[in-house]
Length: 122
Image (cartoon, one colour):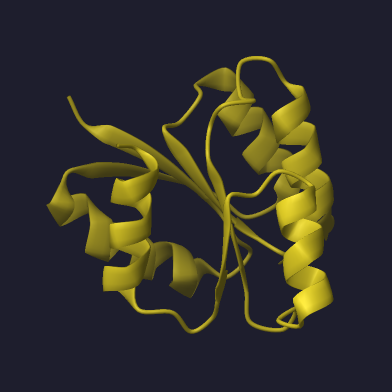
């Protein structure tokens, strides 16, 4: 049975890059370009993991992470936060405090993302 990743990022290039790298590894990659769309998609069909950008056009990643974690059906779904701009220690701590299990700084290596996702689902 395949694993499902939801990528919530307003940058279509990031979503495409993740999809192109992970689908050959057996992942089904779903996409959302806003935080609200991502929350709704996750509620409709809980993914195995979520990759969540810190800065989104309709709010910040930590707030959306908090909303995801407040949903009983999504509380145990691991969220990995990503950002290219919000990279200081305070930003990382805020993401982790709101429920993310890891924080990657863009640009990140796809092999690292893949290994982290595999480790989270063991």
